[in-house]
Length: 323
Image 1 (cartoon, rainbow, N blue to C red):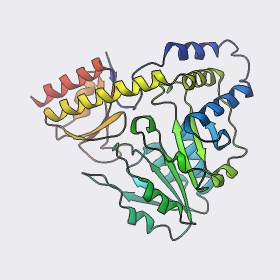
Image 2: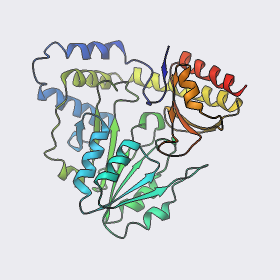
Image 3: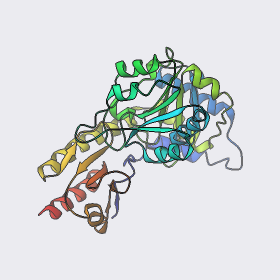
Image 4: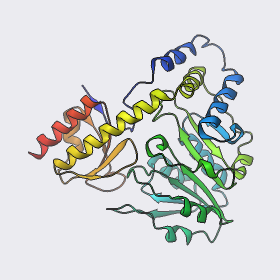
C-alpha cells in the first residue's frame, strides 16, 4: 500500500449520492454542459457563502483563478506575497509580475508582521495571502489587519481560503463593504472533489467588473457532483470533523516521538526533524510526504492527514526511524 500524504487531498470519498450525481453527468458525454446547471451551482454557492451569486465566478480549480487575477492586475501594480506561500501560484507570480515583493514569515511562530506589509502600500499593489497559509497552516490575517489593507486606495486584496472549512476563518462577509477584496475558494479539499477540480472566486465590485466576461465552462459531472455536495453538506462536515480528530491524534503521537510539530488550521501538518533523508526513507516504505527543502527550508516537511490506517503506518515508520 502506498500512502500519498503530500497533496493535501481529502482522504475520504464524497458521499455516495455525490458519486452517483457525477456518474449521471457522464450519460450525455457527447453534449456540452447546460447553462442552467451553472446558474444553479452559483446560486447554491451564494447561499453557502452568504453572498450574492452575482459575486461568484467559477473555474477548473482556484489556482486557475489566482493566476487570472495575476494576469489581469499585475501589469500596472506590484504584487505582494507572503513567503512561503502556495508554491504553484508563487512561481507563476514570479514569472508574470513586473515587480514582486515577498514578505517573509519565519520559524517558529510564522507570524506576518502587519507593518512590513502596510509600509509597501505607497503605490498600487495586489496583495495575495493564503489564509491559512500553505505550507505552515497558520492564520496570517485577522479582520483588523485586513481592514487596514482594504482602506488603502492603492490596495487590492486577494485572500486564498482553500482551507476555509478546516479553519472556519473567512473574509467573505466583508465583500459587500470592500470593492477591492476577493476571496478564492475550492471544493477540492473539504468537499473531496479534487478529481473534478472546481474553484470559485467571491468578488468585490472592483474585481467583479474585471471578470464580467470570464468564461465559466465546467464539465457536467463536475456541475452535478458540486450541486449535490452543496445540497447536502452534512457528509462534508462529518469528514472535516474526522480529519480534525485524526490530525490532533497525529500531532500528539509525532510530538511524543520527538518530532517538532507546528499547530495548523488545515488538513495538513508542518513538522521539523533532524532525521536525515526523512522523506526519502518514508517513501522507500510506501509513504509519500512533502519535502520542503527544495522550495523552502531543509528539515521541514508537510504531511497531509490521511485515512487512520495510513496515518498509523506513517506513525509506526517515524518511531522506527527514530529508534
